[in-house]
Amino acid sequence: MRKLKSISLLLSIICSSFLLTGCFDFIEDINMNSNGSGHIKATLNFSKSSTKVASLMKLKSINGITIPTKEKIKSEAETMSRILKNTEGISQVQYSLDFNNYIATVSCSFETINALNNFSKAIGTYFKSALGNNNSYAFNTKTGVFTRSYTYSPSLNKEYVKISETDKKYFDDAYYTQIIRFDKKIKSQQHISAKISSTSKAVLLKLKATDLISGKASLANTITLNN
Image 1 (cartoon, rainbow, N blue to C red):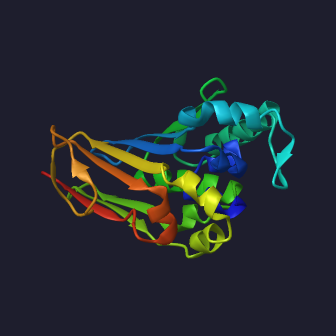
Image 2: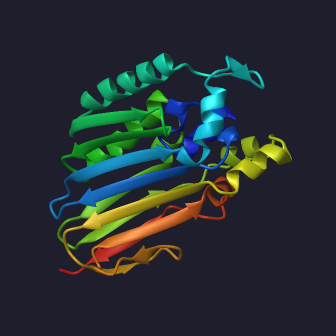
C-alpha cells in the first residue's frame, strides 16, 4: 500500500492506510499566467469518508500499518512546507489540515514553469514518490503551447494487485481532478477525457484513480492558446 501514495503528492501526508477508509478525491488547481508564472493548489479530500477516517485515527495501527497521529501529520506538513519554501522559484507557500472533514491542502506561487516542475520534484523526492520524475510541464510563452508530459509507472499496478479484492473496491469512487486556468482563451487541447470550460480559459480533467493505477489513463496533454 505504501507505494500507492505516488498516485498524488499529498497521499503521504495523510498516510496510505487511509485509502482503506473509502472514497477520496485529489484535486490539482493551476492558474497559469502568460509569462509562465502562476499558482498551484493541491487538495486531498477524504470528507466523504470522514467518519471512517475519524475512527481510524483512534487506532495505533491497522493491517500492520501504523496510523499517524495528528501531531505526526502536522509535523510532516511543516517539514514539507519548509522544503517548498527553500525550493528555487517557489514562494507564498501555505498549507492547511482540516481534521474535522479530513481535507489537506498545499499551495504556492511559482515564478516559471521550471519552478512548477521543481515543486513536483521537491515533494516527490521528500515522499520518495516517482511522480516527481514521471510528470513535468512545459510552456512556450511565445507560441502559447502548454504541455504536460507523463510516464506511467508499472509499479503502481504491481502494488495494487497485491491488495485484497475487498480493499480494491475502496478505489472505485476515488478520482484525480486537474483544473488548469489561463489568462488567454484556449484554441485546443488533446486529452480525450479533458474538457474546455464555457469561458474557453480553463481545461478540466477528471480521471478514476483505478485507471491511472492500471495505466488505462494518462495525464499527458497539450493545450494551445489563442495568440
